[in-house]
Image (cartoon, rainbow, N blue to C red; front, side, top):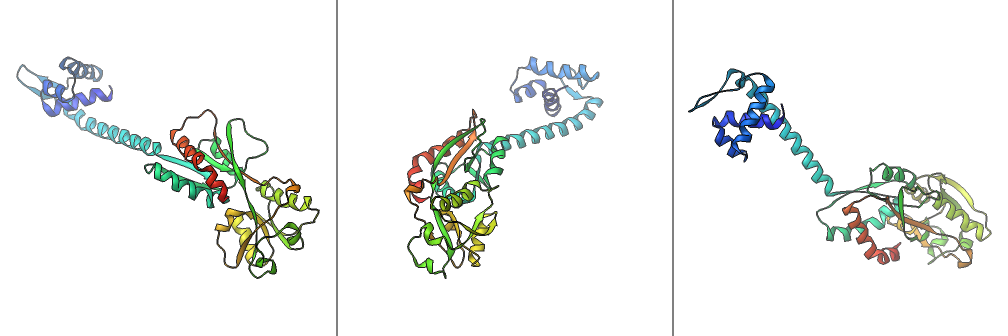
Length: 304
C-alpha cells in the first residue's frame, strides 16, 4: 500500500466512476484501475462493489476511506511544510561577523546587496572569530567576516579584504582629546584597557606591538573581553583603548575617538578582516553577496 494507491482509491470513492476519477488524476484508466486492484490485493478485501452500470464503496472501503483521507491530508501538509521550508531556505543567507565588521562593514554591504537582491533574507550573527569558525565548518553559517587565525583550517576558504584602521578611544575630558590625532608617544603614560588575548589575539597583539616597536612600556589598567565593555570602561575614565575605527559607531556618551598615527618604520600589521566560507561548496546566494562585496571593496576599505 502506498500513498498514490490511496489517492486513487479516495478519488474513486468520491467520484464513484473510475473513468472520471482517472481523468481527475490525469492518468490512463488502465493504470488507475491497476492501482485500485493492487490496493485491494494488498489489503485482502474488496473496496468497491462494481457492476456494469455503477460503483459502490464496500463496507470495508467505507472504513478505509476515513483513515485514507486523514493519511493523505497529513502527507499533503508534510509535503507543503517541507517545500515551504526549502523555498524559505533558498532565499535566506546566514552571515556571521565580528563586532567591528557588524558595526561598519555589514551595514554598507547589506544596503548595496538589498538593492540588487531584495528577495533575499539575510540573518546576522555577531560573535568572536573563535566562535564563528566552527559555525561555518558545521554549516550553520554560509559566510562569516573574521580576523583570520594563524592556523587556518584547510576546509575553509579565506579571502583577505582589507586592514581596519586603529583609533584611540578616550574620554572627552582628557587633555589629549582636544588633539586631531595622537601617537603612541602621546599616550604612553596613559592607563590602557586591552582586549583578552585568548578571544581577541589580533587586537591584543596590535596594542602590545605598537608599544614594543616604539620602545614604550604599556600601562595595562584592565583586561576586558567584549568591545562594548571596553568602550564602556573607557567612558568611566578607567583608561584609554586602541580599537578599530568602526568601533566609533558604538556611540557612548563622553567617549571620543582619535586617529592613531603609526610610524611606517614600526612595521606593525594592523587589523586584518577576511571573508570565510566552506571550501568546495556551492551557494548562489553567498556568491551573489561576495560579488557585491568585490564590486564595492574599495569604497568599504576607505571607510574602515
